[in-house]
Length: 445
Image (cartoon, rainbow, N blue to C red; front, side):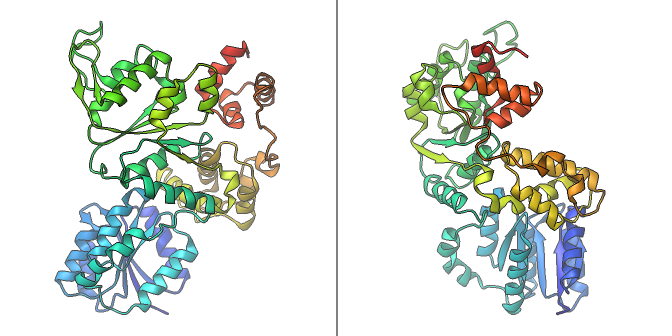
């Protein structure tokens, strides 16, 4: 094999992991952190078989480096590395002649396959005319975020609704990645160049919400020492993500409905309205139809935010994705904790794959980060994973019925010894919702 791969990656830890992987796979990797250093390497090496570059670099980006290669008439194939949020930029790189892109975190088999395809393609960059002819195919190609058919359906729904003006309601348990999905809707919409602002409705009180959402003028209340733009004005032209929307109080729901219907907001203390153009993506882990029946959520607001509904499946229903997400969270942990953990043992990965993740992706991320801290640059083994992973929960052990919700909450709180965060995860609800229900049922710890 003995082919040379130039890696341009400013994340030192991730770059070293890539370098070691290429060495073990029989390649000759050259690692650098900046675009200028990469140019020197290319100028001084007569034979570079493939360039693998991050999109964002300290002194430029992968697209600029690609343009430099083409200007120099250097025909080395180039692939860009990207995250979910930068797929559109990666597609732009392909239009300019990049061979392909690799989405972080890498799955080893996909990495190997794409590298082999690039090396087998020869030594010519795609001409601009050919690349532009392939644009439609590139746009419609399914992005392989997940092996799970359930998630593939979610991504297909996002691709369909994103270019429209429709409001989107994301349904799913806590920790299933609803904000991530909301960002995907925004990034694939015609509003992607404008702001995306996320709002945690669980922390908005009746007094705070109007000012946060719609702004206020100087002197509107005691601490209003200046004018303030609310979220809707800040996001004008873009997308507002309302997470845990079920926690909005009735008065705030009414104000939100008016803003959505009339497409204008009135800052607190102002006598005039301000027109705004925003798209709403809302999320909840509650049954809003039940809340409507209980008089806790406005039916007219529900229909306004639910023009298109997307259900995000829990992690236990897409266990085939656990290795991918675990690898991604390990990559994150290596960077944030300044570790160099290479991966998971087979036994450790089996434990992760077999566990019932009541806290979904958020819980998995916490477990991986903790394990990375204790692994000390060694492979993650079962002994450093939490003990409770050895006794997977039954799938429906903590399912809640509407008639015995109070007893279920009391039972779970007893099991977790009053740990409300753990109880909320097991009960598949936000902590704010748990606190509200404890107050409603008169449950004390």
